[in-house]
Amino acid sequence: MRGGSYTALHNGQGAGLRKKSTTRLSSSFRSGQEEKSWWWQWTLLAVIVGGTIMMVVGMTDHGASVPKAGDLVQQMELAVDGTVAPRNVFGGSLKVERSGGQITVTVEDLAPKVCVSAAWELARKGVVVINGVAPQRISAGRLSDLCNEQDSASLSWIVKPE
Image 1 (spheres, one colour):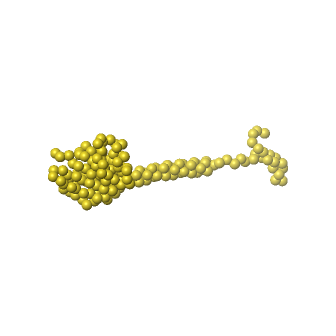
Image 2: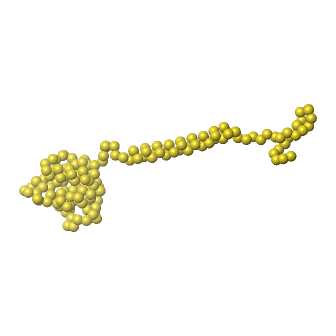
Image 3: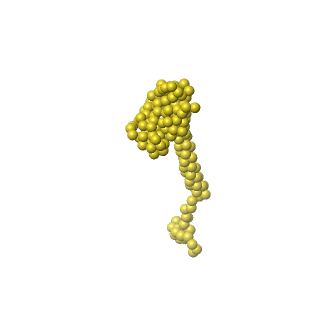
């Protein structure tokens, strides 16, 4: 008797041995398992790609942009030329004072971070006064200290005469 298992026949016609059938997975069953495996892999890949796309789209700007310090600086420069809005781009007040040949633009209720960025940019174009203090020397650290003295800051810019 060669390999495999055998069972005895007891069917009334005589005793004998017959090879026991072994259960093997049919090729159609195996391909069904493989199809399921591939299906899960493609589904997982689609979920990952879809999630990545949604995350990238969610992080992009959809037109409702938040104002930046550069927008405030631009608004203050326009105010010098006569285009004065009652409020700055961050919602605080915006005032322009003209005294002789000197023009001062003042904005109030600024977040400290915006104050620092705007003051840094405007310091090259004139004198900045933060919360009533005009720093002798302009440095990022000094501007940050002055802008962070209170919850909101006041920034005045005295334009350099041309």
